[in-house]
Length: 89
Image (cartoon, rainbow, N blue to C red; front, top):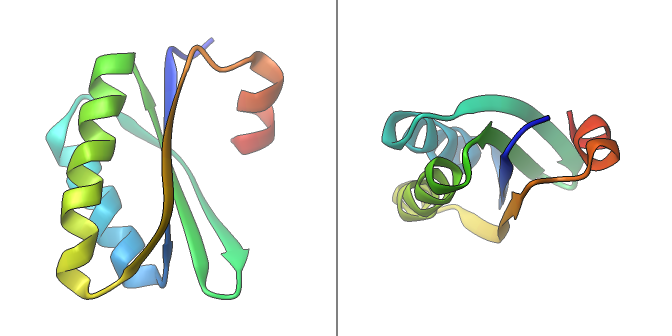
């Protein structure tokens, strides 16, 4: 079972990739998923321990704006239920 999941959703692929790159470089997390939701919405998902995922999401939030992208939402879910993890990944 994973310790935490971090999500950032942007409008557009380039801001999502910029956020994901920053997230993976900033903390000891791994990419767990990359979802094209529709209408240009992209959600990137990372996993790791709670502190690392929180730091990664903070770094991703700071980085996505370099592309002029639009942030839709972000979230850190500590100790996700196994059913939620299976649904997202």
